[in-house]
Image (cartoon, rainbow, N blue to C red; front, side, top):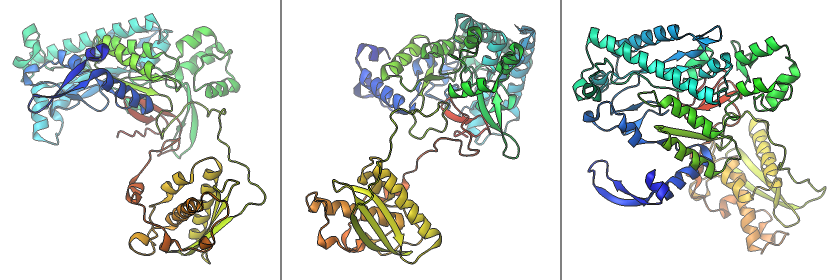
Amino acid sequence: MEAAKKGEDYDLIDPRTKKKVGKLNAARVLDAIVEMAWKNGEPGLVFLDEINRDNPTPELGEIESTNPCGEQPLLAYESCNLGSINLSSMVTDRRINWDKLRKTAHTAVHFLDNVIDVNRYPLAKIERNTKATRKIGLGIMGFADMLARLNIAYDSKEGIATAENIMKFVQKEAQKASQKLAEERGVFPSYDKSIHRERGVKLRNATTTTIAPTGSISMIANCSSGIEPFFSLLYHKEVLGGEKLLYVNKEFERVVQQKKWYSPQLLRDIVDNRGSCRGIAKVPPEVQDVFVTSFDISPEDHIKMQAAFQKYTDSAVSKTVNFPNEATKEDIKRSYLLAHKLGCKGTTVYRDQSREKQVYTTAKPREKNRLLPRPRERVISGITIETRTGCGDLYVTINEDEKGNPFEVFAQLGKSGGCAASQTEAIGRLTSLCLRSGISWQQVAKQLKGITCDRSYGFGKEKILSCADAVAKAIELHGESKKSRGGQKNPLPSLEKPRIDDKVKSNQESEGNVLRRGRWIGACPDCGSSAIEYEGGCFICKSCGYTECS
């Protein structure tokens, strides 16, 4: 990162031989990372130098990576053993209950240490390495709930200070509990090769604290996840029997009921405002300040909050830095540099709706710049191409616009009926919609070509894999014929009734097209809800608990 700031090169080191094998320009590499992160949130950054500065057992080796969500840097064949304290339960009479938090931290450390011994490991090497350092990761969740109960804004100096005080306390008490266990059960086996021996601190566990995203367990505990702000104040939650209920953030609901300015219209306004109450006139400014959502908070404040927790965390902190859709690449780059400067051990960014096939969105679709299909003239002309498929003769009619370009497609199976006929009709309708909406015939053909079914027809290069494949080849044949006639609108006589199996070359990309699979779009693939949050590098459904990382 220092080289990137200066625009300098850095050495490429072979991880096996440790020898220099080349050079790269650090600034260009960082720009490439920024480019991809801006496009779809990947990759995240891990600052290995910062991680290894806190490596508790450097004699055992350097840490080279983390778990997928980034909160647990580990040596090879070590394992995650994590737990989280629900901070929303640590508030009594609008004050932090420090005594309850202390007792919970001690109980949790004892529990996590027990897990190491009772656990059944998939490999002997994992068991051996896990028990050698006995690393545990006690963290927190429900932090946003706690701040709301304390009437503290997440993106405020008081919010940052509260984060530092909470984690400093949890870290201190977790280490006290580990020291007590060391007296009773002994230090971890690799203690003599650890930095703790040099410091004269006897611990049962090489690390004691970690902050995980807690996507699933926070749902079970009905609290906010990890150290993240509220993702949305409203969303639908699926209950037993498939019924969907409107879920209102419990802390916000409490305030609304106390102030007595609840109305159905207010909830609709919040939904229309991406689940946020900021900027809604009916909500008092002091309430807007406290009940901020992830997209209300600036990237700088996201990172400052992560750094505040990292200051008193042994391992690392999993957190997502949320950006609005209009954020620039330079915004992303600045956040990376700030995270490195403030001592974070890694960072993940996500620009809203940047994933090509995003699972969730909180915003209503933007109505400006909508793509509308061209209207159809009453009379248009074209050609009909006949070909054989496994379902019978297929007639593909391609009508043209005033420039001779494909405008609409009708696909009809001879005398066939039922499902096959309805599918070909559907293909024709959707293809027509694409063509009338400005999508090129080449793109449409590319998507359809190579689709297979169990009733293919023919052999070799002339093989028709499915009705969709036949439609694609008919579209390509039409395009090739247009080139041969110099863009003239009227078709050549030789194209009156060609057979595709005689005239169309096979697409060398067919197999690749068949293998292309997108990710889900618009809703949870399990329950269909749109209440999806992106955290710790994963999409998590707040309605049913589905996660793409499980």
